[in-house]
Amino acid sequence: MDYRKFLGKVESEVLPYFGGASVDAASRRLRVSTPPAPGWWRFDVQGRTATAREPAEPTGLDGLPLVRGHLWGTRLVREGAVAEPVQLLPEEEPPRFSPLRARRWHDGTLVFEGVDFEGEAEGTVRLMLEEGRTLVEVKAVPASLRAAFGYAVLEGAARALGLRFSAPEVRGQVLAVAEGGHAAAEAWLRALATERAAHVRAQPRVQPRALERQAQGAVWVERALEAAGARLLDTRRLGNGRLEVTFGFMGERFISIVEVGSLQVVDAGICLAGSDRQVTLESLPSVIREAIRNDVLVITRHA
Image 1 (cartoon, helix red, strand yellow):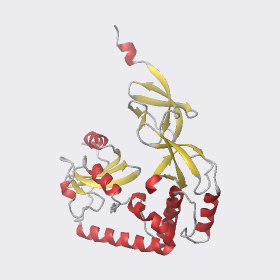
Image 2: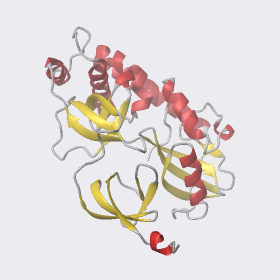
Image 3: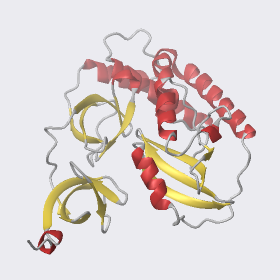
Image 4: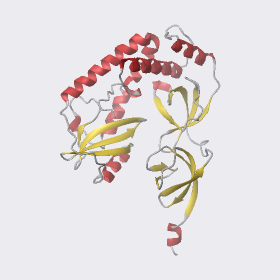
């Protein structure tokens, strides 16, 4: 049998492209030859390389896990106050706090499917936010909507204070903020900023000596992250045998500094109470997952 004809075989497959250097099919990750704009595309697949041919309508969603929740920005807030990014939202932005349906794609990413019909609760919650009120006396509000409101209040307070936060850092506080309002949000954000500052003071400074993209060892870094369920986004050489690694995990973006040779963590980019060097890049995502589950995540490095 001549296997060469199979190696050159080109197949057609409709897949969602979220950005980056790869796209995920049901059973494998494919390298994108020329990255298109994010969206649904018909790809020509040859071997492990996918080439975008033309935009396409979504397909293959019906058999995937359905996730429902309420919209906060570009995230779907679901049970447990978990706020996950939703990819490929429609060009016309749904109203704030809309009830959404999404499907979990093969790589774990949430893909927009549609907007559900609203009840009275969504309109009431929008009004409470506009008027600067709380939900302490508002009944019959689904937990995901109540949490989305809490995130929105925190977002407004953070903007006023000039601070940043990520959803996992404040997840344990959003329901209390929904009832306590702006004052509760501001108090929590100030406490978060204080904890970050204390961590940064305790960390040794790493001075960058070059801005070039790290080529050597990038494949090793990518494999270590993929084995842990994370996705490499970028690398940057810092000198002194150290590498800045930016990666995506559980819908969030993290920046860590590691030793190039061993991938031992120098600065995790999250507060580990001085125990950063006890972690490797491969084990760091599991530490992050545990911090998120226990509502103790504090991110100390931002782009």
